[in-house]
Image (cartoon, rainbow, N blue to C red; front, top):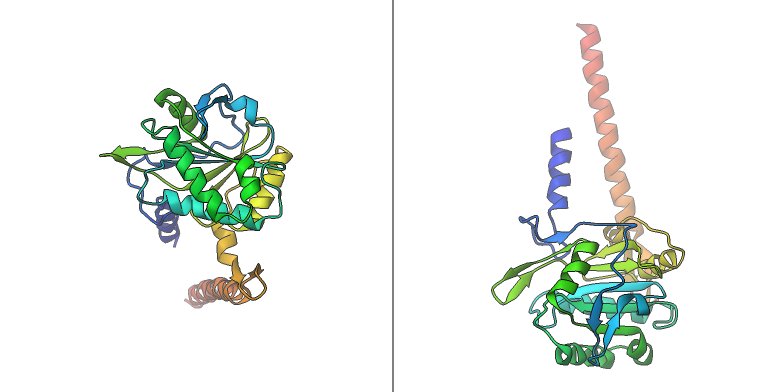
Amino acid sequence: MKHIMLALFLSAALITATGQVVTDTEVGVIEKLDQYIPLDVKLADENGDTVILGDIIDKPTIISFVYYRCPGICSPLMDGMADAMDATDLELGEEYQALTISFDHREGTLLASRKKNNYLNLMDKKEQAETGWHFFTGDSASIRRLTEATGFRFKPTGNDFIHSATLIIVDPEGKITRYMNGIYFLPFELKMSLLDAARGKSGPTINRVLQYCYSYDPAGQQYVLNITKVAGTLIIFFGLILFLVLVLFRKRKTTQTT
């Protein structure tokens, strides 16, 4: 049993947010909770202006690493991010902000500007996103410092990259407080993560647990506890415990009679 559980744990640890198996330690996310990102890093925003991270990180901040030409999970990641920001009742640009940073140093301001405009046209909170969601590019040295500080590992493959999908939450001082893995995010989880970041409180990655326990109710337009799924899991769990108790009891009884 111990060997089976260990195998399952190791298998789960090697699965990326997209469901792909990570076979290279250079790819994925190494969580660095309570560590600080380098606030002296310089980046270019979607307008071509050079900014220093320390000058703009003054509130809870969502950081996402993508590359704008990505044919894979970058667009679904930003779609999920936009949906969650639209659905939360926190005010983007006032109570928190979002920074999307290209980790491909070959990309420039034009791509960043186009990508931002695409998402502004898709979001309900367009005016908030205009001032609260920024798209950046940077040189290779700046990008490397940021990705290393946040534990985001990617690997070039031809003209593209192998990478995971992750949102990184930092507090107003630039301290990493939460990682949210995947391309689908529960609005109340995002809100909870940002409120914790406002207090400088870090927390574990719980996205998968919440996604399993909650389902979206189209009629009520909200997330509700999936009683059937949770109850079924608990029944299986306690059933396994009962089975193990009975097996051990029978084994012990057999040993005593002999």
